[in-house]
Length: 304
Image (cartoon, rainbow, N blue to C red):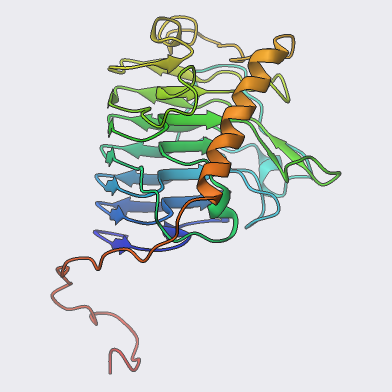
């Protein structure tokens, strides 16, 4: 997909789901005034989102694990999937033993800004996505977020968390972790203005270890921060730095109060999303079209 535009959608401006090995490129999209700019349930492998603008959505870029959703789970950004992942058994999830993995799901060179639109239409599972994040990683594995400009998003520049789905847990719940992701060389500023919880609002907030102690081997390198992060910037680039062969959970099961507070924060963002106003968005300006849109297209009423 090259230079696609979407505005005013009640789910996502663009959606690519249910491909564990997508072999897809999304180049220079412009997504604005949607519930989600990009959504991708259980889509990973070779998948590039590059050079786009994601602005004034409720949240910007949101790949995710999903159950049941568009199966099969899980979302896995590794270049070389474990063979079991082609037809995973219920509840099977990737596990990482190092930060040094090859990542092929890449979110790169995008402007992700002002995703704080409190009035977009919303429906379905997208309606429950936590509000106001530039990049949102619910139950993501092995993704690379690099060299983006991420500014002025209401809750967090990058927000990642474990995703028990369905939630509250049932016998069918899969406990997606937040593991093996890399956040590098991004410029983050002006994020976290919602006033929901100053501990977790800001440029980056990562949760993991509350439900399962396998949200490990996430790492951070060379980012520019101007505001709050959770964990703190000095810890992100040291304890969770990509120079380390392994990195720990962000929250341990022993630290129950911290985990409960983070989950309460996520639920508050979700409630904020569900209880917002719903308004038609302004009509977008005229868009440049392809010079010959019917080229190499089978005969249809639109291309006679």
